[in-house]
Image 1 (cartoon, rainbow, N blue to C red):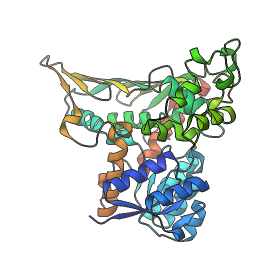
Image 2: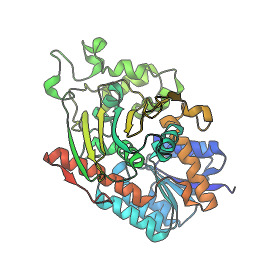
Image 3: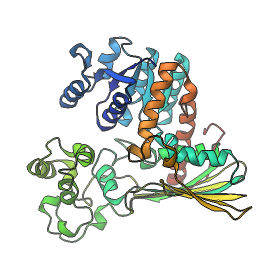
Image 4: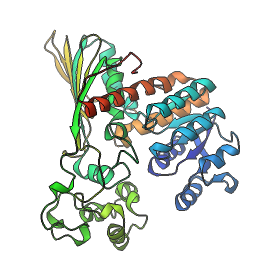
Length: 420
């Protein structure tokens, strides 16, 4: 299979991760980098051996050079997806686009239309579709092992410290600079549930709010920053405990610590916590996204689905219970319990026993599997290897926006089959 050349557009943590998976697969190679941050740009160019004349300060400079690679990894900030994705599609690049597709429907539609207009492959990074766990669930459903899927319960346990890191102190804390949390964090889950049901819901309702991470919940005597706070040792959201605890662990130093500082020493971490956003008290930030939300979906055939996202959990795999007319499946992201109502049989299924990407990898192996599928699809011209395209990704994003309309208006929102 021929090697796929890649332009890396956005060399942040997610962009680096996909690029590393591509190199590890042996079928992809980064040959151009576009990144506005000088340190990240230089580091990515050095890591992937990119020639100096293929290193750019931004996507516009890359685009001005024409099509200089087979495909592009677009992993800019969420609100900056539309322009590079559309322009690179117009140049003929195949696109691996980090989720969310875009932060509003107009931009996402423009990206999907550009992909269709130019006949390029567009893989939005809905990595949960590609895990061995998901493939096993989908196989059971498609084989009719539980009859007709009638009801589902699905939980995304975000994790108390993860929520504080990314959605209180971090980049995704505000809707006006990022997007609603249901889009930035849980568009994975909405897409996954639609994938399992095989249809867009006909009606959606939703409830959720920011109940804890606000000034009214601030304990008496708390300081503005963890490094100065007398309550810090007993606080669940201590930035000192979280980030100093990353030191010495290569995985934790890559994430979440690299989002905080590039100086992976005790002095470097403490300085970042004194001066940067990640050292702030979680009750004294400018965040406004929800910290818990429920979404209820009803499908045209009467099936229903309840999805819960919550910050107030350990950070674990998603948990799901799928209930059908002839059986049920419940899983914890690692193993599945299948019950056959017709025979009374119960058995445990371990999707990893059949091989495939390691579940220890990002998103239960989904990051690796998606990257490999994309590279193979581009190399062979076989778009069927991708488990969704731009049109389908747009439709599942529309479900997210419908749920947000339902949450903010208190109404039940009706959807067309394409999510509009």
